Length: 284
Image (cartoon, rainbow, N blue to C red):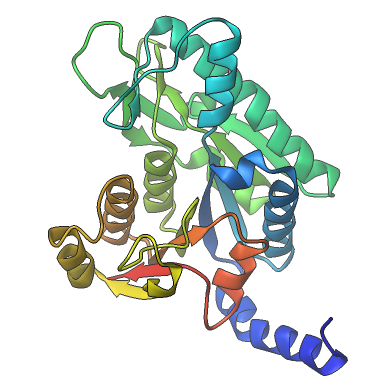
């Protein structure tokens, strides 16, 4: 239990960050264990609402891989992956869209609104938000990549105090739906909005010198250090696409990017509103 003095200290430390980021846009990618655990989900929602209440414009982008797997299993479709990318034929794409744009998206919107937030659920299909195209030239494969982001609807919502909640699917010019990596969607939206920050909630503490030792967490990295860590295989496996997403965002109008542990209660507030932070911050 914090003493009265300690509570005041916490609030006092947050003040300069509140002043710095009020009115700015932060894009958050949400998924993984923090989405599966109801207690953690409630804490993430509370953090988002707190940040919104102090004047920060929040855009929430979500995936939902575990939930997609659950529903595929229910309809007797075996989930398949190739190099970490979901193999998405037309039948699978229908389930992906149903789960992400339907179940997961509306659950998050309901949680935010139930706690007196003003959230609006979207996918890349809504308001011409994202124009997609096929990632690989493979028949009956509907993994997509982003061709264009149109921020008109996002700016309209943000300027009127709403929190856009975006499912990571989109369509091409022929209305064919595509499944797009949620990190990629979050990064592209952050770039298009010239966001102050892009934050990826993950299942690891951040970038570590030893992936088995959280004490080796690297709190701050610039691009040259990141490249060194990639070249020496310190950054490897599933962390590579996340880091590449952050690098691309930094090179395209985003001031800082963060990889943080969504399994820690109030990790968003700790990363944004304290001087120590909790994860890894990447900057130019």
